[in-house]
Image (tube, rainbow, N blue to C red; front, side):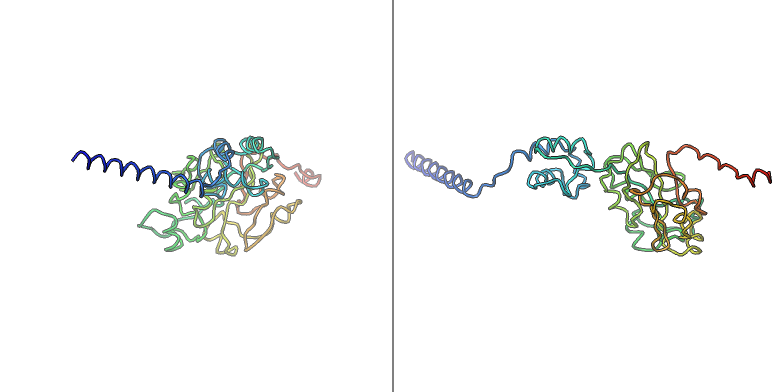
Length: 287
């Protein structure tokens, strides 16, 4: 009996040893070499795994950076220039230069300007509502207000304003990861160049209808009149599909377009009050 048990133990031990030897040689045969710098780069990344870089996570971005010959098309918007500079030091490369960005909402359609014309009683989800009908107002382009962007933001940078029903974006918390941009079914959120003192001038409207129907649906809608384009001396404004757009790269913040817009669709943020225009000699005489 004891000899049978001993034989069994010896056989199992030999089998285990033989299996270990086979697994070792198989592992050596098919092992994949991984650059140790990948771990170093990943350690520098913010571990947000937000997808703002275009990759599934920080590990994937680290692998792409190490395995590529340059930083072209590779950037961590959350970590910003400081993180990319540290990564460039490790890899002995030149850090890419990219302007910081911030998310903005291209809609001003609060209940004050865009009255409700119907009542929705269903799932509180922007994508679902957008697939069913135009929404509770007559504007088929405006914000639906159910907060898909809020749910998508992992940095607590977006909240729905209780008065306007529109998303409020915090410049301090926004990392320009782009999650809110991808979450909005109506493409109402845009990542724009972040200027000094967080100043912004942009068209807060996405309505592509012609002037009359657009204005009827929302009192602050862009009507595509082109007056802003005419006063812009820097070729920063274009009119496409009855909608004005201000190029952040060309805009010099002269603010002429803001005062020229007849519907107040162009907004300015974090600017001092505009100085009153000086009266001409003819106007002074008449006064």
